Image (tube, rainbow, N blue to C red):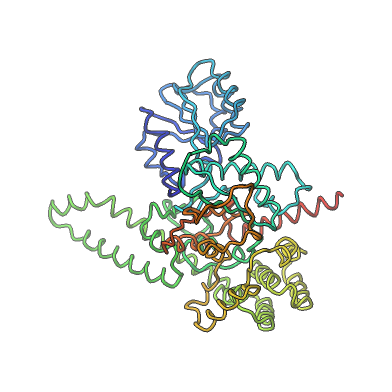
Length: 568
């Protein structure tokens, strides 16, 4: 039930039964869905000689009747209009239409009416309407992700559009897995409740026939939670490989853009970081930064051995052997230089932004008590010119989330210091975060200080000591998964929707975070799945966050909230 293979399977089925030369036509969202599971060379093997976007292909008029067109699009009204225009004067010999989700009857009628030249060979629904970043982690890459922070009254149609996309993504996931879940949601979140209700309505009423798979085993659990219940995780610096690359450089659809970095060879300007295509990355993606350095050194040493043996060509046999092994050698060379470049660049950023120093304090703020010491540490970093503005903002936010009730006077001092230090600092952004995700808004025991069990666990951890001060933080999701495994997720915190209850312990649990996930959380899920607890977890979200994206969403929501209140 691995997500990557589910989507790969759909793409295979689209391409393998259509013989001959093909053009694959995608939209701005399906291009991400396909690119994370399928490489260019694999598309070539399936005789796909051209990949185009649906909006740009409609501008061209040149006939290509020797090519068969395979369309894979989201079933939006905009895409249906593109199809209508393109079918009215067809450029390709055949048209094979695949949609990533359920088509409405009206949309089918439009397509049928437009096909006057009878070039459409098939229309199918292939439910790959989500980006499978990793085997147990998917994202919907919603551009307007800030919508989840706004009250429904501000932009009703924008919020409806956001909810529809989330419900579509969740529905496609369960259709791909051929299961219908029992649904629970976070009680304190309006948006989580709304998504849960609309998903249940679709699965149990509007399309109940489609979702009735007549399975006898226990239904999977779908738990819908709100990002604002744990605003700490997306604000922290990261020190494990995949999460750190996303935090410091940025990963988009498993690709890292390195063009902004100094002199870099052409083939390394955009590199792929995928656990499916890169064995070194697969075995190191969750390792901490210190170990990565050692492991890369080992990889470089191995490569140098191979390079040395290649220099020693003396006979025709040696030459033939070298030619046979050359593709593998080139691939190895590319891989080594990719990881060396990434780690070198990240070390440079860590040094420039004094992240070792900053991160010690942000981990302390997230994990350990001690308000006085925390205030001093944050003040001293705000006075340090080497610490960047964004790091100062994050530190004040982390302090505010932790001590908003305990030290309002000192909190004001930090606000003032931040405002005087940074002209870029948006006034009121920290206050807006507290309004969105402060202690009164959260259900979960974020700092482990409400619940006796958590207090005891934190004390035990403090006594044992932490093996690495930079990776001591556990996301709230970790506790949620623990509660599910032990059957302790309380109905009062996460009620069920409708009268569909869990009959026993679920084997599959899908946790969807409205507002987006982080790579730290996907690491938590992967490590939990490796414990063989008998429950398999899948994590999904409306976007994939790092601190930059989380702050951008926060700023955008604050801007809209401010303009709408001034209009009122």
